[in-house]
Amino acid sequence: MSEKKNYYAPMHTAEHILNGTAVKIFGCRRSENCHIERKKSKCDFILEKAPDEEDIKRFEQAIKDVIALNLDVTESFLSYEEAAKQFDLHRIKKEENPKIRIVSIGNYDKCPCIGEHVKNTSEIKNFRITTTSYDEETKIFRVRFKI
Image 1 (cartoon, rainbow, N blue to C red):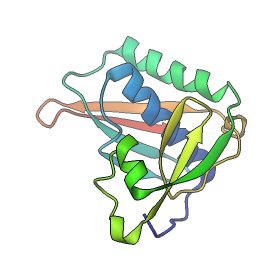
Image 2: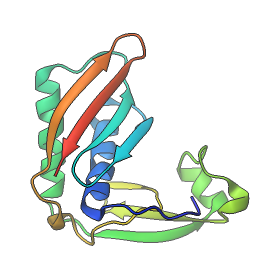
Image 3: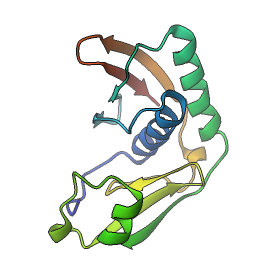
Image 4: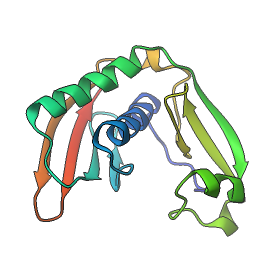
């Protein structure tokens, strides 16, 4: 987590909201794999069954509803030990990251992150899920989205 990537702030913040919403709606962990770009992005979630069309519409609308709340996006720092009590840090090396940056989107979502973010969700425009797919064998639900 020590190296900062060149993120597009609105898209990266939208990804946090998408992740938090997936956890709340589908009862899954945060994404297993994400690819975030300026024009389009994707996240993969492990789900036991494929969401139906209504589930996907509800998921997209919930994300839009959170964005519309105009929530402030803030950061704080925790020691690695304190962060490990609250978050899954399996991808973060303690020796390289004695302090962990936590990004909060209002009271809606909070997670460790190195990326750039907007100051308020009002800066995210026109979120939409473009396509989804589900692989029965791997149980991967892929969500592609744009803003």
